[in-house]
Each structure stands twice: as structure tokens, then as C-alpha cells.
Image 1 (tube, helix red, strand yellow):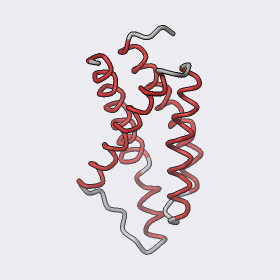
Image 2 (tube, helix red, strand yellow):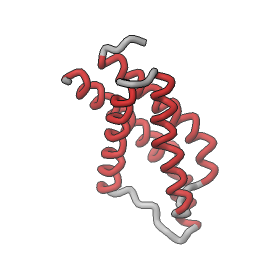
Image 3 (cartoon, helix red, strand yellow):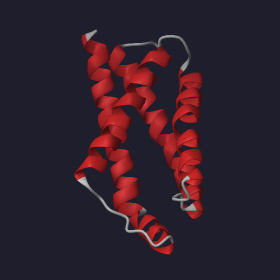
Image 4 (cartoon, one colour):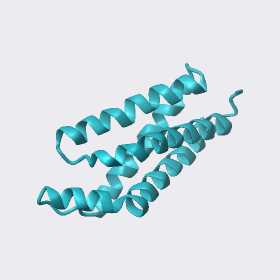
Length: 128
């Protein structure tokens, strides 16, 4: 149980950091420009950071649970499909998804989930 908590904490921290670096440091201009084109202001508020952190740790917990039943590859696939494309569909439906961002977001999100999965597997002490 303790290993599982540590694994979720580490993976959640990784996902949070990855999302922050990608969306706030690398691609913020995409978000700001897209929102401006919609007549909206892209705001970085503490409540947004809290909710994305909650989402990150939720994804880490899902990865930990999936690893109890599936291989690493399957876990990566299911976690990625359940988290990212569904989120992008919602953002697209709300008209706040900058389409050009997907060219970078798809491979980076796959890398993010892959590293989180390997972190969980290692910290839980699971075999490869």
C-alpha cells in the first residue's frame, strides 16, 4: 500500500510538471492567441492549477490501477486514450482547443503517460 501511494505521488508529480512545462512554458502563446481570437482572455489562475493537479493525480491513480491488470503497453494505451483524446474532444466541443497544438501535444502526451507508467511500475516493484 505504501509503495502504491509513493508511486501515485511520483507519477502525479511528473504529470503535473509535464503539463505545466508544456502548457505554461512552451505552448502558452497558442492558448493566449486562440482565446484572443475567440474574444476571451486566457487566464492562469490558482484554481486552474489546482484542478489540473487534481486531474494529474487522478490520471496517476488510474495508471496504478490499470497496471494491476494490464501490461505496461496496454496501460499506456488505455490511460492515454482515456485521458487525452477525451479531453481534447471536450475542449474542441467548447471551441477552446487550438488545433495546431495537437501536432506537439499527441507525442508529448504519449511520452508523459509512458514515463508515468514506468515510474509507477518501478516504484511498485512490478516486473517489466
